[in-house]
Image (cartoon, helix red, strand yellow):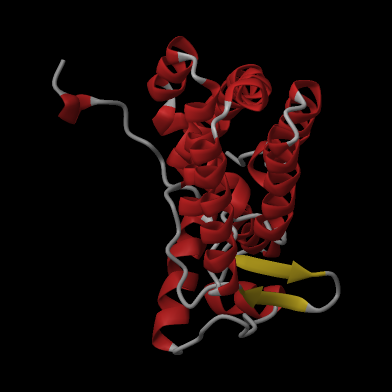
Length: 233
């Protein structure tokens, strides 16, 4: 059947609110740290219920675009509201648990093997990845590229071609989980600290400690707002 004849998706009211909020941020020249209008004011201006506005704010929180402070309003985290389509969020929410489960199984073993098999040159590659991630975070980024380099360097140090192939197979999904995790408030610095603990165990040649540190890290990666979000019909 033609792709053009796929089932129609009815636009949810809060998705329309999201689009209006995106336009407002642009037109008003708002930037990171600025406060959005109160939910009741938004509801009145847009002619919708506060429930619809609240649903839109939750979606923005899930995407790490705003920070809702209890009793203190909602503030922009970035200079724009580049909102990801809700349907994409829903689909990624379905995929994420399986990806995180696979990452824990694969990367825990990779860290253990890296501690046992790494060379001095590979230790330096891991260290350089940590330095790069730290610099990214200091410059206001989430550290996504440094995170990628770190896990790639650990994988290389494990000297397991089959496990490396498995990691390559799910590379796209791993990138999704990495981005999702690192956009959580406070997560980049916490991730860097956990990477450092993994590195220190690998340097010490302690496979069990490296595996345990990696397991703790991946379980932290799994703690994302997207998985707690219940999409509204």
